[in-house]
Amino acid sequence: MQIYSKVDIGKVRASNQDAADAFMIAKNAAFAIVCDGMGGANGGDVASGTAIKIISDYVEKSYSPGMDNEKTAQILRNAISSANFQIYSLSQKDDSLSGMGTTVVAAIVTENYAVICHVGDSRAYLINDSIVQITVDHSVVQELLESGKITASEAMAFPERNIITRALGVEPNVFADSSIVPMKSDDRLLLCTDGLTNFTDVSDILNIFNSNKTENVPDLLIDSANNGGGGDNISVVIVSQERG
Image (cartoon, rainbow, N blue to C red):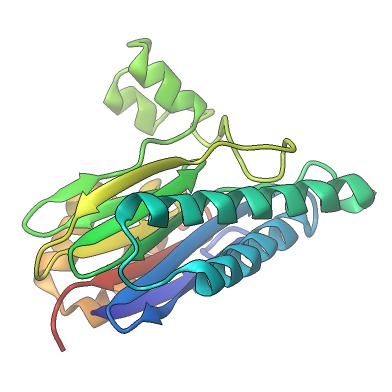
């Protein structure tokens, strides 16, 4: 199992409010997380950084090899709830952090499965010969798509496509959606912020994966997003089942 990651400020933003982390939590298990912060001059930085630290620490202390998928998903949900409460508490105590929040998509990947939890519009994709979006955005544009009020092509240019309907730190409690996805040899799991998906088409993401060594893909994905406008911070984490 291999892990690759990169975070980039993009070409427009004055600061980087994205954060990411990934590491092995057991011999055959990897943990990966991506967050996209929001709020104030430094609120986004604080929210995403707090989420990364609390969730990563919680998972590292709580996960044990051999846990079933539902127990693994519960660990991720508990970790996200803990981070949510801490971010919310910080925002209530410090006026300069009022209204801050962050998305999160986190995964524990074993040899056979990926267990994924998310809040917001940061995404997880499963990539092999095709690319499949695993997560469903918690966003205004997703709700409009599901209700049939806009089309997929209209969604790409929708002026409020960055407005999310669920985030860590906005309310005292938050519900994280979870997914359990079988992983085969040579499958790759991509976690990313919307700084990638708003500026790079999914077909281009798949082509970059399938035309290059995985170790080079983070740089190439970020280059693609920047070439597409680079209008936001960009974070990518890849967990690959490729051997060696």
